[in-house]
Length: 276
Ligand SMILES: Nc1ncnc2c1ncn2[C@@H]1O[C@H](COP(=O)(O)OP(=O)(O)O)[C@@H](O)[C@H]1O
Ligand SMILES: [Mg+2]
Figure 1 (cartoon, rainbow, N blue to C red):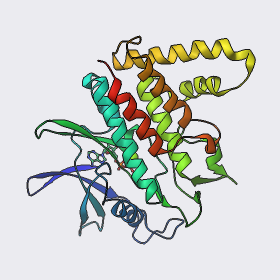
Figure 2: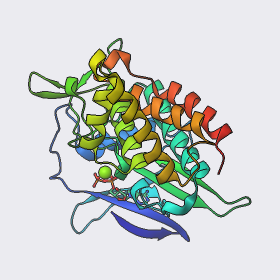
Figure 3: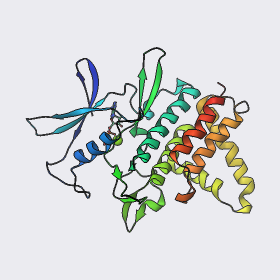
Figure 4: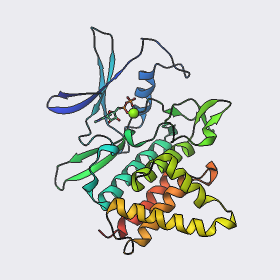
């Protein structure tokens, strides 16, 4: 990714390294696939990275996708001191981006903190905006189907059902799972593996684990309160909502998972009641 300027506007330039004409499994070049997916998502939602155009480097033959530059970088790079309310606002933005994508039958296939961007807009009043980016592994769901062959993904963010006959499949439920893991790791400062172990305990219905479940629940709420620097007692209901959102999106059974739209609604409830 390179940074450049067009007429004074800061842009991000993504050079897609591929031999010209190399098709992927859906018959498109990687660049064309990303262009195709991201361009169909540009209308109707502010929370998808803005594509400005294409650029062709004559000397090397490389083709570049030119995007609006997100000045705070990825969700990973956002300073810890932005405040809990702003952080929840950002997460709602990402969920809205995913909701829009899913309503257009596009599945992302690689949701993770690095692919969620943040821009600080200094207009009046200054505010942060979250956007979904990197459509290199995105796929369009065939009409009437909820899974599609292909996509990439990152270890720790791929649910078990995504591997079918040793090939990766994309689905809305898979993106929701990856987003749930993303939120859990960012809210609690845990690795995807540590988070998953805790979620598995919470989601198990083994009666002998009831006391352990209560302890894990409390521990996770405290992790979030610490990470957000908020009072755990005053914000009990918000912590419960956030934890429930993570828990429902990381469920091992895809049909039991939340949808991106539902996550937006739940987190808006939390946003409205958070005390800093
Ligand atoms: N529009 C943008 N503005 C600012 N930084 C960006 C932008 N797009 C991508 N990046 C940064 O570059 C990284 C790589 O870009 P991405 O599109 O995810 O490509 P890759 O396929 O290499 O993962 C991102 O994780 C992010 O940190
Ligand atoms: Mg990426």
